[in-house]
Length: 198
Image (cartoon, rainbow, N blue to C red):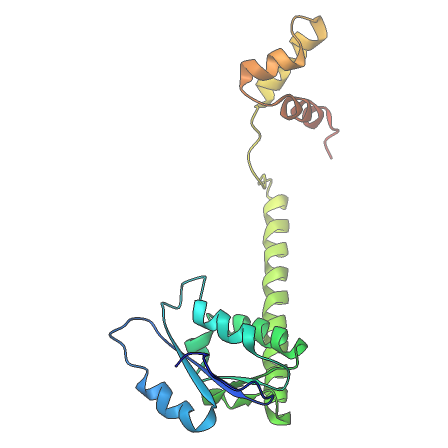
């Protein structure tokens, strides 16, 4: 189905279906959504693709009061987090999301409750991951592990550069060209070596 000659009345339930290849059939999704939707739009595309033309077109034409209907989470979204992000965007526009197999319809109190629980779990997972990352970095620092990209100049190279600068044998620009770094990289390396060690 396409968008031609479709009505513009608010409150439409627009179904989005996806299959990964032309060989796959969307029959199960069509059977599940036909009686629940005013329109159905099928996309043939792998779930890993960053751009989903049909999905983007469907979402772009939704108006306040409409509902985006999908059969299951993995038919429209890459992850629960992706679903939550899309749902938040839709909610801000006054558009509901209905994931049929999950019984998540944000136009109904029960669906909004499930959505809120999913959002809370997603936020908890993000905070837990951030905390574990911080703890891992702190543990690495305590063991003396240097974090981030390695310096472009070694301590011995910086010492040699300092000696030449102090005697006036070369300029910062000339030394930077010799060592294959930008002048600001060279001066930053000098500041790093001069910084008091804790």
